Every structure is written in C-alpha cells, then in structure tokens.
Length: 212
Image (cartoon, rainbow, N blue to C red):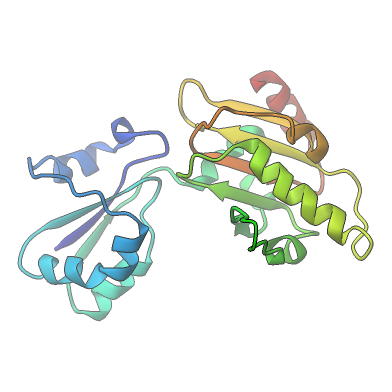
C-alpha cells in the first residue's frame, strides 16, 4: 500500500498524529524531488505493490499519484494536513478566492506572462509552497506584467498581501501596493504567498495591520 501523508506547512513537527503513527517505522528517508516524483513514479508504484511505502508531502497530499495508484489497482490511503487555504489568516475568506496560480521565476530568456493576463480581474492567490522565494521577486514579476499590460488592461494600484511561514511562530504578513512590496524583503522565508484581492475588506485590513 502507498500512504500519502501531509507534513503540514512549516515542518515535520506539523505532521498529524494519524500520519505520525503510520510514518514512524524506522526506515531510511529518501528525498524525493520534483524530478523523481514526476519521472520515477513508476518505481514507487512498483514498490508499493509488495510493501508499504509512505510518501511524505509538504502541505496537503496532491492527487496525481493517487490517480496513478488507483489506475494501477494498488491500494492507497491519504492522510490530509493543512493546505494553502491557511492564507485565510490574512483576513480574506475562502469563498472570495479565485483560482490559485503560480508565478514562475523568470530567467534572462524565459518570461511567461500568461498567469497575469488570465487572472487580471480575479481574486488570486499566488503560492510558492517550498521554494526559498522572496516577496520582492514575486512583486517584481507581477509589476513587470502590470506595466506591460496596462495599456490593454488598465487597472488601479492593487493592494497585495505577502505572507511567509504561515502557521509558524515567526509568520509574517505584509500589506501594500505592488510598488511598496517590491522593496519588502522577507529574507528567504519559506512558504511565501501573495494574495491580490480586487476588493479589500475591512476585516482583511484590520488583521493585516495587526499581524504586521
């Protein structure tokens, strides 16, 4: 059987009791990066046919490999944990969220802008679950897209909220315009998200001010 166990948002100590009871078996841990998960998933499936395999996931377990297990006729079990919905701590209720998108990290020769055009008029949650990103980087990419698209899609100065290490004792919430957040460095803190709402609610303003 293959177990999918969510580790939570901050670290291994956020694992649930149920997940810990399954995970605590004394075997050696193997670091499964993105390449391994995407390119060598068949090896995990093959191993889980004859023994129990635990797949530990930062955040909440995702479904791609679950579907592979089901299609292969292999038993699997998912132990859920906290997910990106934790960004509600900034005061924006879940029902106001639009689609969750990811801002890729630009290179000198690769600068995709599709995410910006598609989500220009939505309430958007932009999430980087593990990458050691900076609020500066996310804001700079969004600002560059805004400047380039402004003539075709005029918008006002949007209020944005940056969050880092949500759920940890040292979590940080910063609110401001894109121009202001470009100069806000959260010093490589993990679990960075940026919420860009179309309508800023009073509750969100109060909580963001309190948490800053």
